[in-house]
Image 1 (cartoon, rainbow, N blue to C red):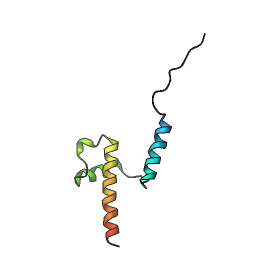
Image 2: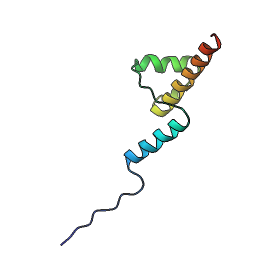
Image 3: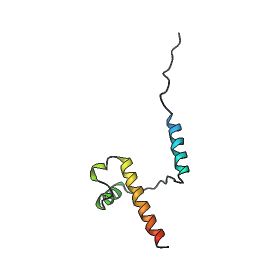
Image 4: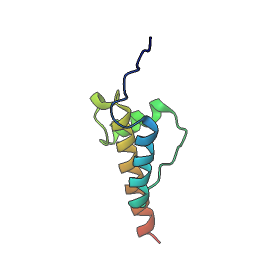
Length: 81
């Protein structure tokens, strides 16, 4: 008696991470990990209008808002050079 396991559907999580990494590398982008106080960051993003309060429960939205803020900060710093 043999039992067959279901075939996986779609790419594996590792394959997805590799694909995303390759896309970022082609776009000359990199992911940086930082440690920060969650409440302070979220409050600041909302207070400055970078993120709506109703999106605070979505980590991807918070990450995107942080990315936008960082790029604005970086552009301003480079403009001063």
